[in-house]
Length: 165
Image (cartoon, rainbow, N blue to C red; front, side, top):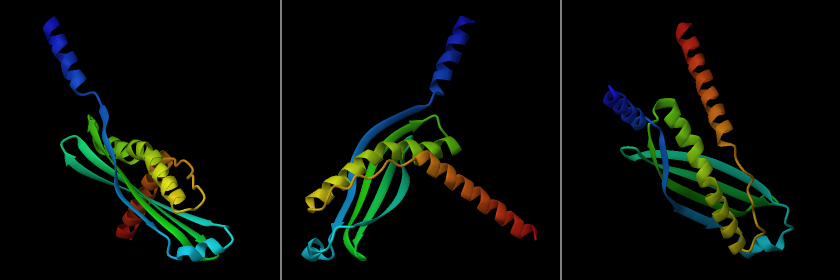
């Protein structure tokens, strides 16, 4: 009987959630200064636009690649001063999560780990381009994921209303 309980405990441990960062790497980087040296003649009152995207891919059983793409466009006097696009990626071992829980881990926990690396790359590239440092504010990936879920639920509800009509 004790052996059965130990066996159950071992099986219970096999069901535990495992989350491990395997590797973080820079997947892609682009920096452009379309105006060239002309940009430095203008008064520096930048308009900053930030776009954010994540992509996930299953690489192997329990191994996922998450790529966080940040696109920063800075305009001065209506013209693009510079454009930076960084794709910061990571390999994550995730075991014991399925469905909604797995989606949440891939879209919140993984980007939360990757974002500081991407932010540092953006700052370094911008300063090497001879522009003032650009420190991006933190991003609440949990709130973004919750908003995306809510939007998907609303769209699904609207789709059901249309089919009922």
